[in-house]
Length: 134
Image 1 (cartoon, one colour):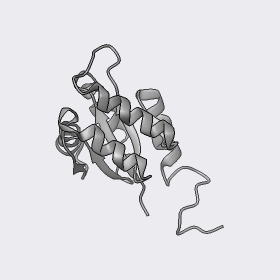
Image 2 (cartoon, helix red, strand yellow):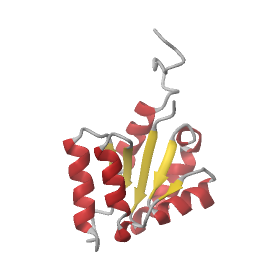
Image 3 (cartoon, helix red, strand yellow):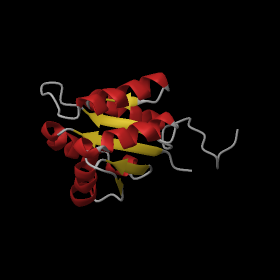
Image 4 (cartoon, one colour):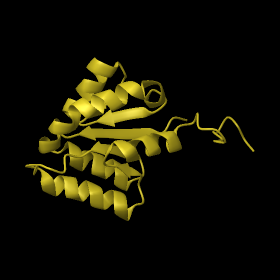
């Protein structure tokens, strides 16, 4: 069964995000993907992956992903722009808090994004999926 991965990228990080997603396209294709509106459209249009689209961040998409994370439904990759304040900062903080409270893997930059998808990918050496019992 595929894992669920939520993807978010602030506007000033979308170019970096698309480059990362393109490079990791084959790995990302192994996940059920969900993203905030603009990020989802980039993944679909530029990277060519199927993805479920939520609201944009300012419209509540970060809160939707936080709710999924709180119930253990997703792990999260979030390319955060630390240099600019966001109008929906309370939702962003709530998402970060929920991930911390519920021990949900959360990447906020390129380095941790690489670690998370490689660690969660069913293709990682030594990983046993449901079809490969001990």
